[in-house]
Each structure stands twice: as structure tokens, then as C-alpha cells.
Amino acid sequence: MNRIVFEIAKRRGDEARLSRLGLPETDLLSRLAGRRVALVGNARSLSDKTQGAEIDAADIVIRLNAAPMPDPASHGRRTDWLAMSIPVPASVIAARGPDLLLWMTPKRKRLPWRVACASGFALLPAAYAATLRQDLGARPTTGMLTIDLLARSDLASARLHGFDFFASKSLSGGRAAVDVPHDFAAERDRVAALMSADPRFTLA
Image (cartoon, rainbow, N blue to C red; front, side, top):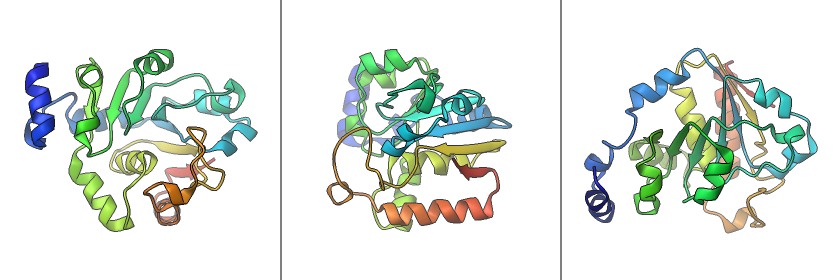
């Protein structure tokens, strides 16, 4: 797909055409099979912990959006996958150096061409976000969308770091929970239910 076709598809909301971009979901899930995953959220509370070595010891380290990394002792150094719902600046992506860029939000108009045409790129099907939104009663966060993706895979384990469901707010900004279109209590309850049903998932 060239850029002109891409921009037209975005404006028209042509999900069928956009879905041809990047890795198919089967390939994405196969990369997770049997792997130990560290999913690193952006809660400010992670800065008070020393989980960096544990994060870097995972087979795959996934970070979210601009992925603030204030200290290797708390946050680690590696970024293998970057899951995004915002157009992260090219300079930040270059600094993180991920092998794979995941576009999670169904808001396709936000997707930059430079991300969509990257050699390692995958587009989350919009239907998954729609189902989660219905279940949660609010727009799912990038972290929740990523957890949902991991739950559909045959990964060995998923350890969630930097997830306190906005109790300490986010390193990405100063907004309060009332200022964002998410239901953090609903996401907390959903993750708790997932961990009870699926021992592969644990909260660091």
C-alpha cells in the first residue's frame, strides 16, 4: 500500500483495506507463543520500585505509548514491542528501539504513515477495541487493549509492571482520572478476574 492509498483509506475509515497493513494477527500471536512477557505500564508508582532487572529478564518487553523510562533500576532498559494509541514522536521511537510497533486504538486517523510503513508493524483489529469498550462501558486504555491481546495468545507468562489503574496517575502527564475517557475501576476488576482465571498473568 502506498501513502496516497493509505491516507484515503484512513479518511474513509476503510478497515478492510487498512487491515492489510503489517503483520497478520496470526503472526503476531505466534511471536508470543511460549514467551515470558513483561508488560510495562506508565504508572508513577513504578518509579518507587526496583523492577528494572526483572523487566529486562523477560523474553519480550512491551511498553506503552511514549513509554517514559526515568530510571533503569525501576523501569529497565529494553523495549521489544511498543504498543501505541497516540502518534509517538519518531525521536522517542528511535530512542526506545522496538522491533515491533503495535497500533492499538481503532482511531485510524491518528495512525502516522511513518508508523504504518515500518518494517515491524501490526494493527490491532478494531473489533477487539469495540468489544472491550462494550464490556467496560468506556474506552479501553492502551494497556487494557494490550492485556487483552496477550490473553488471546499462547504465551508462557505475562507480568504486569507499572499498573495501578491510575491510583498514582501516569508518568505521561498530569491529568486526573476524571479527565480521561477510561473506567479504571472496571479495568482493575477485569484484570483481577483475568488473573484469577488465568495463572499466566500476575501483577508485579
